[in-house]
Amino acid sequence: MKAHLSFPLAQVSYRAIRVWQRNLDTFLRLWTTESWPPFIEPVMYIAAMGFGLGAYVTQIEGLSFLQFIAPAFVATAAMFVASFECTFGSFVRMEYQKTFDAIIATPLNIEEVIAGEILWGATRAVFAAVGVLVIIAFFGLIQSPWALVALPIALLEGLMFASLAMLFTAIAPAIDAFNYYITLGITPMFLFSGVFFPLSQLPQPVQALAWLSPLTHAVSLQRALALGRLSWGLAWDTLWMAVVALLALNGALALMHRRLIK
Image 1 (cartoon, one colour):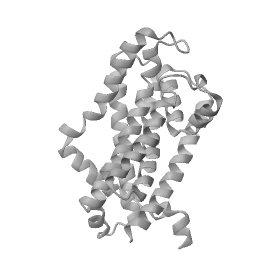
Image 2 (image 1 turned 90 degrees about the vertical axis):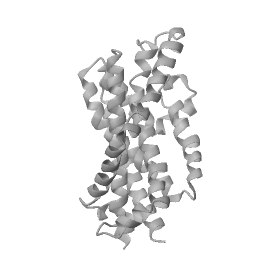
Image 3 (image 1 turned 180 degrees about the horizontal axis):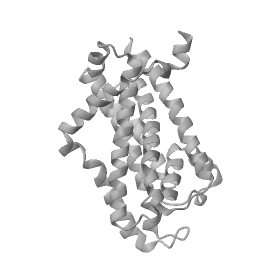
């Protein structure tokens, strides 16, 4: 029992893929309405910030403003999609549609259901990252073939943000509570994780807080890959994301188990 509480990830088997498959099948039936919205917001930001505000901003780290911000939207798109999928989406399936209850009645256990949900959130993040990559490539903002590595990085990021979102879902008393997570968690990360300006422009204490943001490391990786600016520091960014993803995933499984067995 203690081992289960300390490391519930050990309870997950290959059967979790069936939950992922169920969500994929639903997505494919609704793809005409589900697939395009995540791509619209990055396009609007690129157009408004890059072509509008970018006309008044001097170069940043040897790049135009548009070249600087565009790769970051690969990371932000993955964050938003994974977060919304495993907050609002998972909560609806859990509380309103009672999908979790129905699946748990099969041989799958709670941990496998939640792991499948998180894996699906990560998959949606990769879909979003692919869409943004295609868009910025169309604008000629990809400067290195290393940009292809953005996809496994988006998967890791998706696992991280889907797990963090599921942590909050496990304690959310009602669907309206997700407004707090988005407003106080996701939005500050979006604004202060190096998407629009270098972190060196921030006061030192704020820089330290920004460094703790999971999005900071995803943005750093995606920008470096798109521009071909590789360094050993990127290994640390990847490790940080992997650790956060593992801890959040394990925590989400534990908290959701506690919630669903009530």
